[in-house]
Amino acid sequence: MDLLSFFGMISLPLISSPFVYLSGRLGAHEAVLHRRSYVVRGFALLAILSAWVPFVRTVTAFMAGETQEFMIETILLQVDGISLLVAGTVLTLGTLVILFSGPYMAGEAGEEKYYAMLLAMIGVMIGLACAGDLFNLWVWFEAMAVSSYLLVAFYREQAASLEAGMKYLIQSAIGSVLVLVGIALVLANAGTLDMAGVRAAVAGSDVNRWVWLGAGALFIVGFGVKVAFVPLHTWLPDAHSQAPSGISAMLSGVVIEVGLIAMLRALSVLTGLGESWGVLFLTFGALNIVYGNLLALRQTHVKRMLAFSSLSHVGYMLMGLGIALTSNVELGAQGAFFHLFTHMLMKGLAFLAVGALLYALFLQNDSHAPLAISDLAGAAKKYPLVAFGLSAALLGLGGLPPLAGFMSKWQIFVAGFESQSGWIMALMVFMAFNSVLSLAYYAPLVNLMYRGSPSQAVTAGKPVSAAISLPILLMTLAVILLGFFPQVMNWITRPAAQSLLAFFGN
Amino acid sequence: MSLTPLNIVLFGIVALFGVGFYGLLITRNLIKFVMVLQILIKGVVLALVFAGKLSGNLGLGQSTAATVIVADTIVAVVGLALAVQVRRRFGTLDVPKISTLRG
Image 1 (cartoon, each protein chain N blue to C red):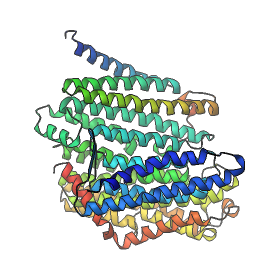
Image 2: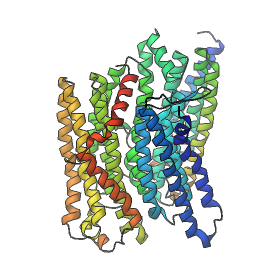
Image 3: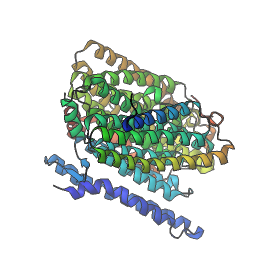
Image 4: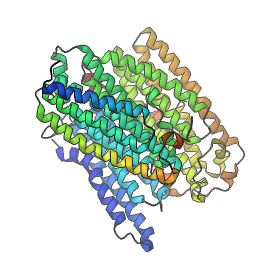
């Protein structure tokens, strides 16, 4: 048992977070401000890169079939397919975002806080995915929420950022209260909060089924705020568009998905009700897809449009999970988890590429104006790599073959037909039409970048540095290669899907 | 319903939730919002201890309640810090007046 590396995977980013902050605060003298920024950035990058070592060791131990559990008193942390998938996803995007943020955040007041909070958020998300009891899960969830509030409101002199942070805080705080009420309900009736213990207690209890359904409903509404289930999504477009671009990528690429994982974990303890949650997931999935698409269609700001498209992509994941839970098709969950990963790549790439353009066109010219779609006209000539990356991300999100997004949507689609249930197949057709509809807002942007005549902003834009281009280049390659070789992710998506179905007892 | 200690606690939980949710509906001021949230959380803390007592696992209920108090203080601090910044930037704490982002 390799407990040290399992523990290190969670705690390395967490422990390094205060040190990154201190390294920025010590010797905070104006004359060395520039050099200090390099120290902070280097330290943060080192911390996140060193977290890869225990991660790889944990994966090797997992593949060898070892059970990895970590018990402190009653707090249980354990590794399964889902935790490894989440840890891998979070670490990948986290590394790229820290690399990207180097030049993007350089010279901002409070740069050291940015990296400290970002590292803490990464560590907390990995911990959340490993949580083995309900209350522990809530504590990780709340820690993730607090660090993301601070990051959303990072530009605290900008009125719009403050407003977005405030909306986010109000809605999420109410959500986490509801989750706690659900936890209290489970504790009162099951007598324990350990997930395996609650599962056994629920299966053997003679308590009215409605009690468990009520607890589940509280979990769905509470975590649903974070996942942006459609009536509870109103904070999302503001927060995702006002945060610094690296954080927008983190929020859209991993934070809402980790919220979904937390919801799945909490719901999975209420055994025997998997089918009810599956039906709910399919309903909310369909609602999210169509609502996200329709609102994204009428956006004029690029980051806001991407934020609304996150709503519809959460919908695709919910569809896959719903298929798995209602008709016990493992491929559905596998497709959902694959889409979780590809969405992280594509949406992360889209936000980073847009961030690079925002930085080159506006931020370097001391403007905090939002990037409008029309500002990107003709950007491809001046910024060929960034424009290509953005196009690959957008077309991938729209589900154009042979990009990564097509493959993951296709897997969900196939799973839907494998279920052989009439109304799920109807939903799949609905999903496919919506995927085409989404091209109606992705494709014009690509067209505009390549065929439009350069806008005023592009002509006045500054060049994009190599450190910003590197993560964009890497992610573009990943989006294209995953489209050709989707099977390379099977080693992790399959165990994740298996552990999900095992949890729900199907 | 007789006035046993357990019933009094139950009544307390329901009352705190009632006040909290009603407050959420009518509050427009950011500082008051943080206060209302604290009232709701106190209801939850009481509910957690109560749940522990009901299920015969009082220690677990109490330890979770203590953790919730700590975690929620942090949320309150962040909320108040945001409120201070909002007051400086907008000159008001009235939530509807701060809403400019749309659609």
